[in-house]
Amino acid sequence: MSKARWHILREGDRLTVARRVPVRWDLAVQTTLPDADRLRIAQQVRQDMWRALQDLRGFAPVVQVTRVDGMLQVKAGGAVAGAVAREKLEAEISEVLNCPKRRARWLRHAQHKRVAA
Image 1: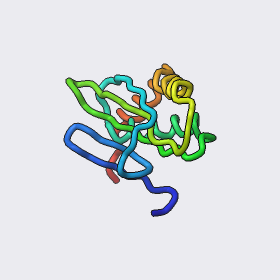
Image 2 (image 1 turned 90 degrees about the vertical axis):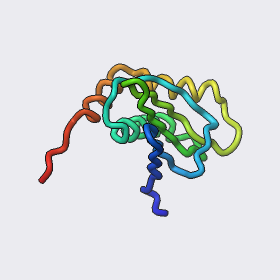
Image 3 (image 1 turned 60 degrees about the horizontal axis):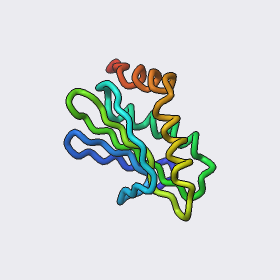
Image 4 (image 1 turned 45 degrees about the vertical axis):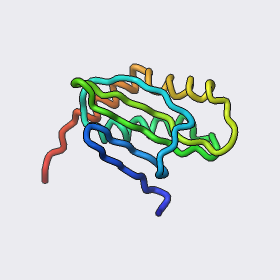
């Protein structure tokens, strides 16, 4: 697999974007967003989480977006090779997920409709 490839797993109302499969959750933080395009939300969250944790060696990001009762439940985190300060890293992921500017950008991006050529 090339370096730029991501696994996109679709299971009913759940969509998962992962660097590696099988998916492993050594770190995980959750939030809720209004309903929007799940793949676009997952990709935006993954990019921002990756930027925040790019110096974490052995990190394999995972973002899971599940549609529940007209909302999106977003779970972000992933696998880490080796020992880590889990609480500190989950706090950093939480900051990413709960940043009002990022959330607004994710939703703008996910609600944008592509025009067919």
